[in-house]
Image (cartoon, rainbow, N blue to C red; front, side, top):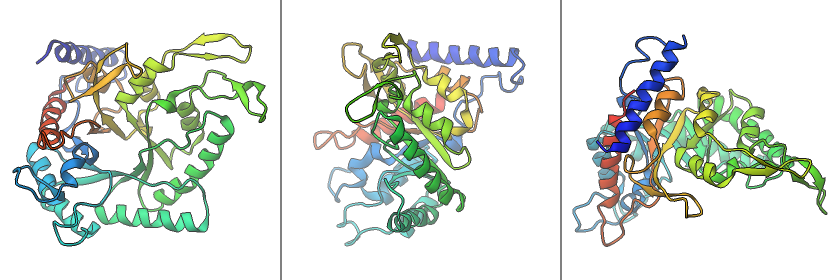
Length: 349
């Protein structure tokens, strides 16, 4: 166990004990049990996309859904989040079907628990029909959540986020009618400050902020029964590094540092899913972090998972965007998957 990991684990235990001492927990909560139960240890397949999409080869590394999912189950993963439903067509001589993917999942004791699918950018009869097809696929695969990998809007302006609230409530209600939770997965930009006040620009848009962050505004205004969230913990820490000040309605620069843990702890049930992605801190870089396998970076997952509330409820999915090793190291993404699983399973608090 690395020094950073040991300190994080000890901090997690201390945090859990503090919650119990405050009367918010029980002796069982304050113990040193696993922070991620066995059945909730997951992976988004984007991390191993190179091997899902690979043609049959002589490397000895698994390829395609059947072989890669079998290997992930062997490592110990129990949940899978999809980032597409296709593999190399030469494996079957055609494209695999959702029904065939479901059989592979069932054969390996895996559960589909989400997908970075497409949530339409407008509400029309055509987009409603399109989203119904997305929900059909989710049902075939046995999902309980369906989502997207992008923000509800890329805008900084309040009016655009208000429109996104209405749109997501519409599609979220459709998902809920089928027993699915619609979620948005967010990167750092969603935690920038909303432009909602101050003098207007030439287009009549606000130029300053009240200090509320875009995603927090969206969380507060969407229906909690229809719209859910998947925090990418790495990108939330990047936002902590990047978005530290705003210009208030009076034109004064104000400092406000994001606390990713506090965002979740304020309403942990709205965050059923996470991307558990690690990074080494590099203040000289624009992002502030560089991605590495889970447990090899500086993000303190022990403290985070021990103190976010609703222990045992959440579903962390390991992700590492740069896990594929290319032709020089075709086995790297699956090797990183095993390293990251071992760290996830070892977190206690």
